Image: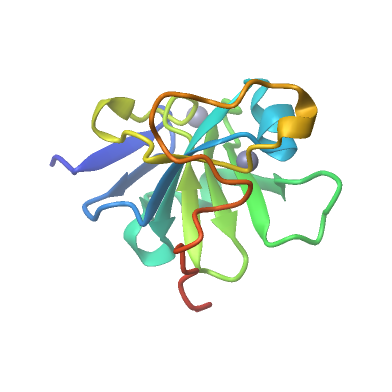
Length: 145
Ligand SMILES: [Zn+2]
Ligand SMILES: [Zn+2]
């Protein structure tokens, strides 16, 4: 059984046969503190498009430790601790960080830079992709489900 996009760990598997709805390089401080990476490649799928084979195999913790009631939860494998996805309490999106969550980033190129903040002193990216201080202005959140 092969899927368009697939990842996870040895215990919990995720996949999507649909295209992501957003795909960006994130410069935000929450991603930085969670991933330890200067920037984080973040892929949004419609909540219903990203399937999980063993949802009970996941531990959940607030994605943003400073906003524990926020909608996004970091889901990690109960067995090995691998980050599996970010889940949305409002069931709008599920989020994959390809290089940490078992995905092949090759066919998942980010289309822009999000949450770039010049005040951090980081040079503005000049790889030709658009740079925004938020998500791209035309991004529309799917409805809650
Ligand atoms: Zn971020
Ligand atoms: Zn695992």
